[in-house]
Each structure stands twice: as structure tokens, then as C-alpha cells.
Image (tube, helix red, strand yellow):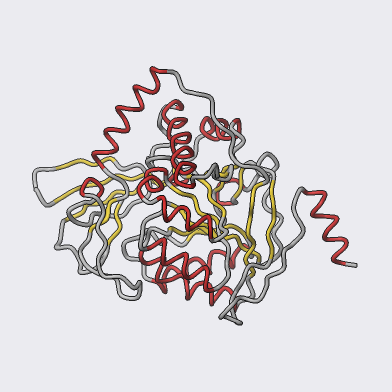
Length: 357
């Protein structure tokens, strides 16, 4: 009787009936995916209580979580994440950066073929969505969608879901995304796995403590971080031990095609794209291996590689260079209310892989 009532409720909310987890081949103790829900982006236009608690949220039961990954793909970290998810029969949502999708289309297709949901995360990952002109934000959104769709190939398209880089929201950008039929995702708990000091134990403990306070919701991780790839097996095991269940979210329809931009805007964005191309994002410092990820060295094209690690940061950086050649000072904005300042003195790069923004 309870199953009939649940099915009726899901039908009224636009969700599909739950897909019960099946036995995971080769891993009888796997976490698995407890059910899949299909959402209407118009009904769930903004998700994640970190920023959008006043909006309708996913109908998750207690101890149900949705796993999401940002900023990829970047082999071999994304590949390691995919292997771990497959070993636990877990489905997740990946918010891909257009530039990265264009560089690594094979990895994009592997994400799709594994059955995960693919959303978008802009073209160049600018950390100025809360300050840039709407025309530039629009081009970042649309170019990212086109790049991911091209990487998918065979007429396949990304899901109509978008996460703003750095969660640096603005009303104008959110209104534009809604007009495009895109559901804007924030999160309910993040792991701070982008911090340079993060370790696998710290990532696991921080994410679990934050989701325990709420009991359910969207988890935010970054598949481009080596520490995340290392922490993921431990995190999934701990989620199972504590009674959490994974829910896979799939939108009803693919993203719609955007109307063409005016020629003047295209020329303006071309100059910005060339500037971003010279800077390169994300940048990888190839200074040595990370134990446990099953690889020795990874090299990106020289235009995408930085000579040495720098500070890892969230927010829009303003960099000022002073007389001392070894000192950089950074001002970063995590939210409009939070300002952090850093003074960084260069040291010899550590003997490990380091991801930098």
C-alpha cells in the first residue's frame, strides 16, 4: 500500500517512480543508487539550500543525497572518479567546463556512457559571474553548452542544468538562465576539496559533518582535484555505513538551442576568449605523481600548464604585484559579504601533482 501511495505522489510531482538499486557486479557491499528521479527544470528552477533555500527543493527523504562534481573533465582525476563510482554502482551529476570538454571529449563521452547526468559550468570558468556584463555571462553559458554538446557528439546534448562558477550568483544571470529553461544548481553541503591543505580524511569528514546537519541534499565535489579522487572511495563507504542513499537526478528534456548573438557581441567575446586562452584554465603543475591514482605523469598542452603551483582560491581574484619578486598578494571574494586576503611567498613546488586556478 505504501508503494502505491508513493507512486501516486511521484506522479503528481513530475517525478518518475523510484528505481531500486540492483546488485552491483563484483561488489555485493556496494553503496549503489537507490532510485532515479526525473525533474522538470521549470519546477525546480533553483536548487541547493546554500543559496536557494527559499525555492522548492528536490523531494529527498531523510539521508538521501545527490552526488555532484564540478570543473572537469581533467584526466586522470576524472577517470579515477569514474572508476570509483562504477565500482560502487553510483550515479552522479557532472557539471563540465566547456574548455575542458573540448580538450578531452573522450572523457566526456565516458561520463555519458557510464550513465551519469551531464550539466554545464560555463566555457572558461570565470569567477566573475556576479560582476560581469550580462552579455559576457550569456556567452560563457552558451559557449559552454555548445562545447559540451560537441564533445558528446552523435546529436547528444547536455542536461538543462547549470552551476555558476564559484557559486558567484547574480539576479540578472539567474533570470537569464531561467529564460533558457536551465535549472540553476547550488548545493546543500560542500567539502572544500579545492583547498590546498585538504587531505582525503579532511574532505570526507567535512562533507559528512555538513550533510549530517541537514540530513539530505546535494553534495558538491570537484573531479579535477587529486585529493577528491583519493577521498572518494572512503567517502562512499562511510556514506553507506551511516545509512545514506544515493539518488540520481535526470531532467526531463535536453537543453534548448540559444538564439544567435549579434556580431558585435561575438567580436567582443572573441577578444575575451583570446585573453582567456593565453591565461589557460585550469592549470596543472606537473611536479610529480600522486600515490594511489594509478599513474606516473600527466602533461597538458603548454598553453594550459603553469610553471609552478600557486594559491588555490575561490572567488574573483585581484592580483597585485609588489617590488619583492617572490611575493604576491591576492584579494578574493567568496561571496559578496566575505572578503579574504592572502600574501603568498613562493616556495619550491611540492613533489606531488597540484591543481591550481
